[in-house]
Length: 392
Image 1 (cartoon, rainbow, N blue to C red):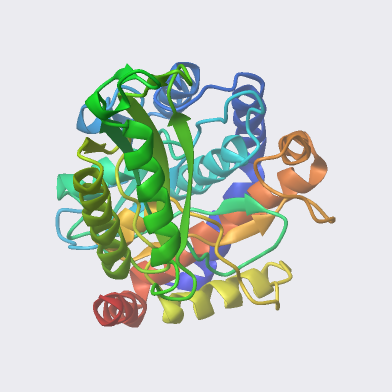
Image 2: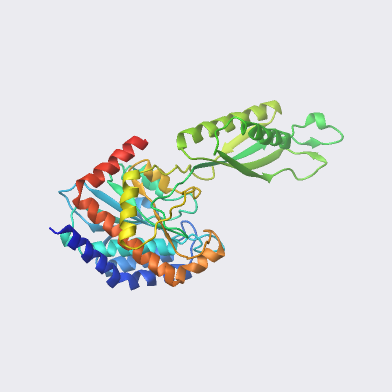
């Protein structure tokens, strides 16, 4: 088989089918839905996939707005590839992270591959992953065990730069609730146990910890409740803190240290502390340098100018959890010729521009080319697995 000819045919199919992706992007953009409430987006994806006669597993892994669509099935191959689609929005500012477009991009790549599936091999899936902005569903995918034997997963995120890969920090967060004993602050303070004192001591302990933690560690938080009357010894106080570092193992050390500090501060003030997590930890994104080089080659072939500046961490994302189970790729593509930051109204306004249509087309072609080359060049997936094992 002439692989170059097959790749060209699939990329031409991207051009023929791209209006469908543009319409999908616009529909989801105009109907923004937050984490785990992406009902309209979910139904839209299901309809479009079924209209193309693509088999879909609904409510994938028991998640109401997740799906798994089979793009190609090959019982004779152990290759498994997942194309990830995001579609949740942010409260108040809608698709200010560009998920309406990045999901449409993934759909377009999957559709173009499906239209040529008689010439493909391997098992290829389009996977709808809700709630990236909060407690992301990719964590459920990672915990399910179903991706432990995947060759790789891939998506492309919207940004103002064309990067071959992304950097994410590991993230964990907790609520610390201190409970004491109320009493009159003037008449009998000795009968009380001050929960705010316990919390304040803990916050000071965190600040002292900063002297001994590794560069790049982030500890940031806020007081969520600090008493209701200055004339009463407060019996309840709470704060929430988030912890970040570039690698999960060291982040776990910092988190365990903070929990011990909270318990020590409670003992020192004769209060009690309850430590709970409002979400789940997000891991860092494991590096895969060999594939970064391949994505750079594909970008350049498609006239996508690759950013030459140092790539800075984008924050945290649930794709990091998947990257601990199989190779996971998260390049970015520009939706603006000017600098514009994600999670802003300005970024959301870019979603219906000509440049975003360009990004959807080029991004879909990049994913398609990466998959075709991976299917027919054994060394590519072999190098992915090598990078994956070495990074762990």
